[in-house]
Length: 524
Image (tube, rainbow, N blue to C red):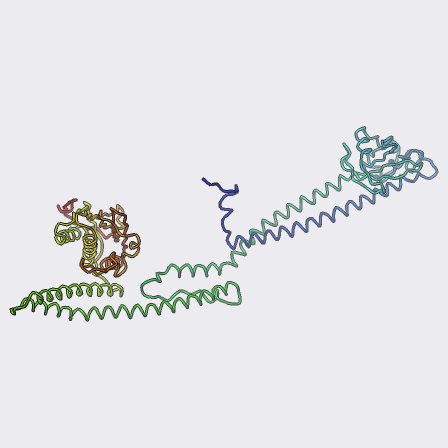
């Protein structure tokens, strides 16, 4: 069994709707803009904060490079001037600032401000404490710029610091540093706020965008609904009804949706015109067939009557004449049947109402099978499978009997002698449909003919032989009569099993029902 290449669910690989694509595109665009703005803001803020921090560091470095005046104690009681780290005790240094003496690649002296010395007072000379060994080692191993620029150094216990190298008053190398933790914390807070605000904004933009796009696409949905309703109309047959059009509000060519609506209206106009032309042509043909069939009934009856009268007259006629008269009578009878079938089809096509009454199919089936058995002269085996309860439909019993006669004649004509024909009536438990099936175990219908069996003048023999008496209209009448009753006719065929199924809407069950003995399954 093949498996999807990606682990994503199938729903993510399906086509997205226009609404989803627009909302996702808008949210993605907003996300890109927000990311650019946030990045630029963060970079600018970082540059500003580190610039101020570097200015403060450079000021401290300048103080470390110059000894206090006179070599005496520093203002505020700081350490003596001969101490290279005397600047650490000066006022105004932030807590965590430090100074260290670097000699031969190692730190020989260091001092860290442990409390902010903003005011002079007693005890300030003791402000600060030396670095630990780990801190001194990390500071000595730091890669600092050779040009005296500032660099960021992480020290154990002191965090991130900005450090600068400066030459002391006695040629010593002094490292000065101030903490950068507050700047890093401020940058982290800024980034967190930007991410939270951007996320909330994207969610709000997605919700608002979905609502706005939904409102904007509402006319397009109405246009699609109109097209869907038109596509569901039975345009292939029947009278042509005026096609629904897109409202003028959704057909304004100045808008994109209006252009679609206007184009759809133009297409519907062309389709409506074509259907009207088709309907007029079909109406003329149907009327011609009806009129011609009606007019042919009288001369065909006259021909048949005169042929029979001549054949039965007292005048002596030769065998050839009698044969010719019999053939004239037979062909006139065949043409009369064809004319009657064409007239019936024309009336059904015109939508003439049928006579409707509550009809139990079982007696109709019994009568039709009895007639078919008599007409078949024992060449076929006939079986009945009828329900114990009435299979009632609301329809025209004469036309339903004609449906059965045509189906049985089709089975008798197109199957070899000895074929078993089974007629089955089934009524569903909920009684929405009653199904009539006529099946046989004959050779079946050729696959290429199967889709066309209900078409008019469809025949299984290419020569269209008339010996069997078939006009090619029997199954077309079956379909037309069943459709006029609101049902449908189907066929399935394989070698050894062919079934014609007629589904008719069920009718009410008669209140009084007496079970008949001929309703039981019989075989002959």
